[in-house]
Figure 1: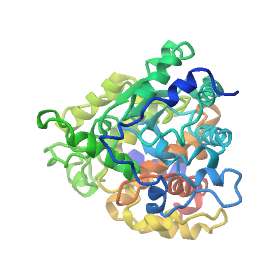
Figure 2: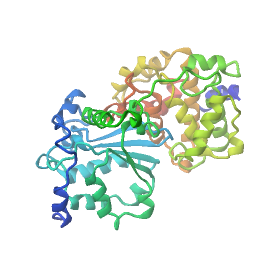
Figure 3: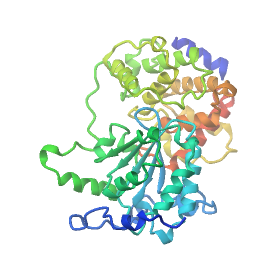
Figure 4: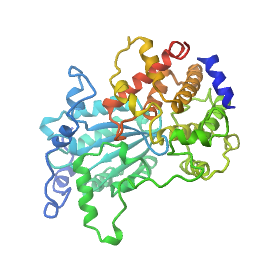
Length: 427
């Protein structure tokens, strides 16, 4: 099977509503217990105050606040969109209609895929909170296109205000959408959904989380946000360095078992599946398959007969590598890779810098993506769509966090590699 993968490379290469006044009286935090946070701009400055958009972009003045971010995939292969309430400036400094349009523009790139929305509520105050009528209009603005593929909405650090708003909105919210709402009381609870290291969580949110954790009795204090890694199991496949997996592989090419199984199954059964790599899979099945691989048990995707499950497992395997497939060494070069006209020899040079443990696997990764995009009229997965899906799973910074300013260039680099694969990889 693994030899076939390598052979394939050569072959394929209005005004406020009446409840608003009452809501204005609701306290977000008890001021007598907690001191006020620093100004919202402190988080922006700590990140360099940069925007992923050029200064002349119509949404630049919104993007520079970093209210909305994209943070790769969650633990189940779904794109993660983050909304930071604490980064919203005072009402008179923010065009809320433009914010809504910017949020829609950001989501437009991802709503064809299954996605997760995480809303950090702490930091929303009487000075920066939008009107109730704006929230109502915003909900109505997001039609079925945006709602059908959102698999979960997580509200972190909910307060009486947000709970009251949801009660008031209950007549407008469909039962199906209401089931997607989840409250997260502590950041440590997010680890079940997404690796917190990949989220750029505002300092104010982290500090607030520390405060409420310290206020609890020792017996009920939740665990750390990012628990330390446990030593790898003897047969573990996820979260293990590629150099280790090469020695655990059952073939001479050293292809990790997860990549061999998933790609082999997808080549035979999934190339014409619409939305391949965009859809999520049953959460319980994803967990079970991961446990089986890490325990040394055999996994048969043919018996499971689920293309999207195999696709999610492949993305999860790449995302959980201790070092990304494209390596930390290439991170700065790739994030600064902007030019559409860059000669292919620059791309060739970069992929040739990969260590042996990554190089062959990256070629196999290109093979399956070229094969998928060749069927794009059926499966709707063009090179651009595949780049959006895989970019954040191929490369991330050493601090593991992902932002729009990094994701854009990474996706662009991935797309150009796929567009020019016949020049870059066949020398």
